[in-house]
Length: 364
Image 1 (cartoon, rainbow, N blue to C red):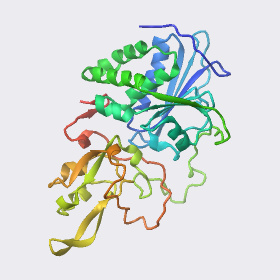
Image 2 (image 1 turned 90 degrees about the vertical axis):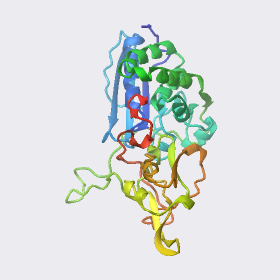
Image 3 (image 1 turned 60 degrees about the vertical axis):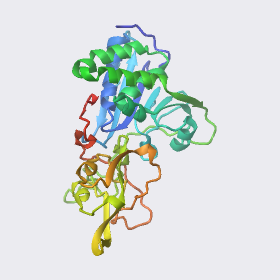
Image 4 (image 1 turned 135 degrees about the vertical axis):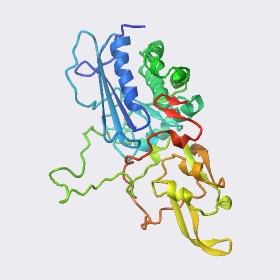
């Protein structure tokens, strides 16, 4: 299926531009590639897409950039998209940690994965202006056994107001359908629900928040000012990293009365989540499991799999906004700490979803 689409709006260079902001593991890179192919093959446009990411691990910041223009015009710019017509935010937890809304103007459409309302998200993002389109992509992906990127793709198509849904469904059948045929119907369901279940509201500049210009991020340390000896100042699992943005809907829940303080959860956890403190167990002095520091939990659920007594069970994060056993890490001595942006973590494949096997196409 191939359509010839006329772009409804372009920038001063004649381009229609999309920017995706995400963290590794949610599929923004693939979504960007699919949007690039969509423009070139299915919409009759000239198209370019590329991504920017670091260590290719879950939790690392990821950006994807897409440009379209009429077939009679060449794309002669390969720099990042600064002022997108559509901005896709794949994880609500990114808001406030990184300038993900930089370059957004009053005509930008912001598609965000959240269960909150557009007004609530504007407050959280401190957004200057623009149209906010909310989609609960995480919930839909969990229900449909699809992935967040498929739901976001459907929502982005809806936000555009000119991309035919059928073109995206054909693209998915021709690409992911061939690679993961057993996942095709689930992915198509995710796209359709993303298209159908958006909530939107447009906000005009009202002086409440200032416009933020886009700037390329710069590392604090570089080759000119790195500490002598090559010290890595941003290693992956530092105690001040907040890995909560790496979670994909699930968290471990602690049932203390079932805990035998065996420490298997602590030994299997790579991120200092469990906090053991001196106490009493069965009338004797012992190190007792006091709870979890969810700042460091990426939701891999390996602790649930290894617990011999059922003291740790898997739960849906949104159903537990007030976590009973949330205990600060013993190494976080200060009362307040400005956590760094989420860093790369070691969750690579699918052991964490217990009986569910995870592949690039979704849950098997």
